[in-house]
Image (cartoon, rainbow, N blue to C red; front, side, top):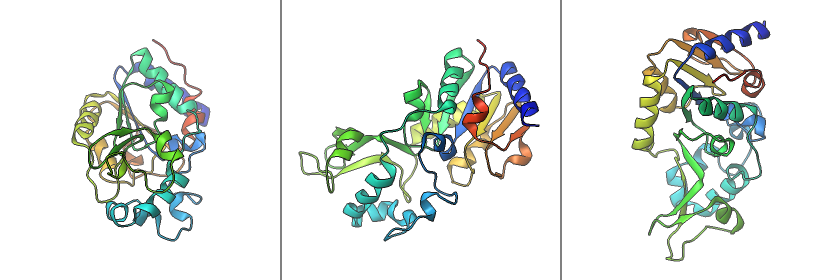
Length: 243
């Protein structure tokens, strides 16, 4: 059955001219980055504070040191590499078939694999800025320092990641919606589609086909032309990219 579905996915991709990939944490779990909501995910691990509270704007402002303890331990992952899913998506873009990647991930693995047109809805660990003067700092510099990272001007450095209570970046949102609305194939992979407002973006799709590749069920399964309940990297590694 799975081989038949992969053959169907191959045909759908071959016939598509403007593909957009919409992905979440499940895309990076095969690189060793834990997701949030699975049995072993971050939300099911024990800390002094719930992860949902730690990853909020209010907590960052009031308990910055505690925020950075969790952030360095669980979010600031720098020693991982792209997996088969990231590489295949980059290959599709290089071939001219894929016009954009819309990701909820903050790890930068799509870019590391070679993807250029990436809309990072929730920001990136690789961008960090002083809240006072705006000076840029790398992820490595944040990882290597201790305590609360401070700018030379005296301001606190904040990761360019979207915390709870914060809004998504307007420019990124506009680009993501524009890409999705102009695609003829939307591949949704490695996401439970349970995080809003990001998951609501798929409603802008007006194209021909939707393919969903995810281990668990999503609310959009009934609208999919093809549904594959398996690991995204395992599935995409079997796809041949044709120019």
